[in-house]
Length: 210
Image (tube, rainbow, N blue to C red; front, side):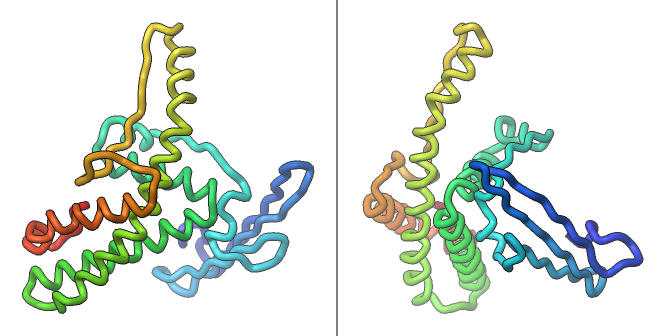
């Protein structure tokens, strides 16, 4: 974001008015650059400071750019990021869950890397695994519900585009799991079982694999 501050200045400002349901909301962003590598951002809604997650969903936006072709051409990561981006705009609760999940994933990967290199504490892995499975279950359930909601829309869109010559279906297949579920307890149990089966390989590779 530092590139958004004009050369020779230390700050920049962006304001935008969003009108939804006959209600006008002022969204503001302030960027303060203390040096070339550090930029502080302050966002607000109607002049009241808000976190980034607090703004999510206020102005749902559809953006298409060339990198989105990776959703079709590349592996599963772009698809997951695309779904998570939609989920974050639909629900601030899910947006927070995604942040918690990513934080736990980073911590668990860091521990696995330490263990692979001969350091770290193996007893901590079980605690991280349980917390990650619980958080991951929430993400998995949210993705599964989103796919169920998107499928009829995508199916109809393709029928319209091809004059009903082609049909499509969307399937969400979580890595390491036999099938998706919309029950959080079941998803947690499935993830814990997957982690148990992958434990040896994860320790060898120093990376979370489910």
